[in-house]
Amino acid sequence: MRTRRHFLQSSTAVIALPVLESLGFCRFASAAASATPPKRLIFLGFGWGITESTWYPDIKAPGPDYELSVGLKPLERHKKDFSVVQGLWNKYSNEGHWGSTMWLTGANRYAQPGQNFHNSISADQVAAAKLGLETRFASLQFNGSQSGDLSGHGPGLSMAWDVSGKPVGGQNGPVAAFHRLFAKDTTPIEQQKAMLAQKRSVLDAVLDNAKSMQRGLAKNDNAKLEEYFQGIRDIETRLAKEEQWMGVPQPKAPLPEPKPDVDGREEIKLIYDIMIAAMQTDSTRVMTFRQPVNTLLTALGIKVHPHDMSHYHTTLGEKLDASQRRDIAQSELLAGFLDKLKATKEPDGTRLFDNVALAYGSNIRTGHELSNCPTILSGGGAGLKLGHNIVAPKDTPLCNAWLALLHGIGIEAERHGDSTGVLKEIVA
Image (cartoon, rainbow, N blue to C red; front, side):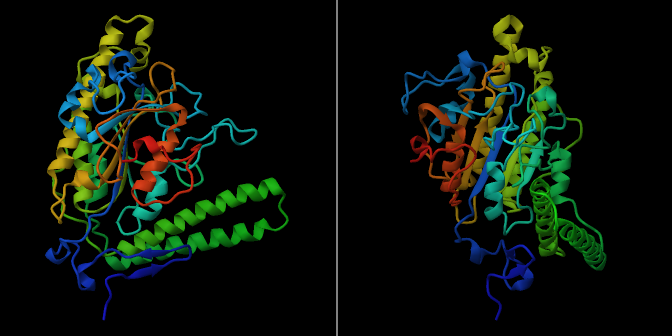
């Protein structure tokens, strides 16, 4: 008799197989409708910060009875379902052009002697190690199609960084994101198996050579080689994931394929829609979105350079106007995303919103200022205190909030980044 749980043994881990029809049950069967929906974790990040004077609620009015600021007014209908958290920061941050590079890691870029850049694992990847076991994609990373330096994010291929602090690649733009999720692989199964066997063969040869080289190396070289071994282990995990899902058809897309070359505002809306679709099909439970700013400004008819806009305080005028219009547009888009999370039903009748933990913000406050990172938390999936203007104690690490999110979705990490403990002020 087949059990509901099947496992695939790899050289690095035991990986739980997904719920498959061929094993005697269906992921979407009505019999499973009463099952508890899975937890999901979403990070939405933007560069260049916000307009300080018109985005933050009054710091002297903490609690639920606060007035929304001008920059957050479009979120009025969701006021009871999100909290603004003030006073958080990454104490090691020292680069005013990096809105997301260290946002989810809290790392010290100078932690390695002799190197001017070091990063560590991001909070989403900590969650993906557990939440990603039963899904086709352990995590998905989305970017704007042109979300490089002009969008104030800094180094990285997405907002995600692996256990070695190396950048994790992402999908640039909605078309690439859609294809990653829903494009059909027409390669015959036998050919897929042969390709996978070839990858494993190459990996085994590389591993054998590395192990033979390890003997007699100096301490520093051994440390570098251990980092290399970690990279090999990561590849092994990805190969195990490929094998796990080989032959399982990708789900039917619950939305049409996006058109190319959309403007920045529409691009953000489309990525939000694709994120909803990814959760509807249970393709992944962990996602990040490194949002565009430059193309959003263009869509709003703003001609101010994104970097100059972030320094509105030096001349005010059109730069201040651009910054404020950017804030309102981003809040409108976020409100639309929350609308859809609430409107999308789970098999058990709850809303998608009820099972999601969502963080929205940036590592940059404004200009080159890196303290009091703009932070909004929402979703019912992590047991957070919603509907509040929360003012954290002085010098509270942003990673304390990430640790609270991780704990809330069942990831019992002892610490994360430079955290000093769970941010109790946001726990319901």
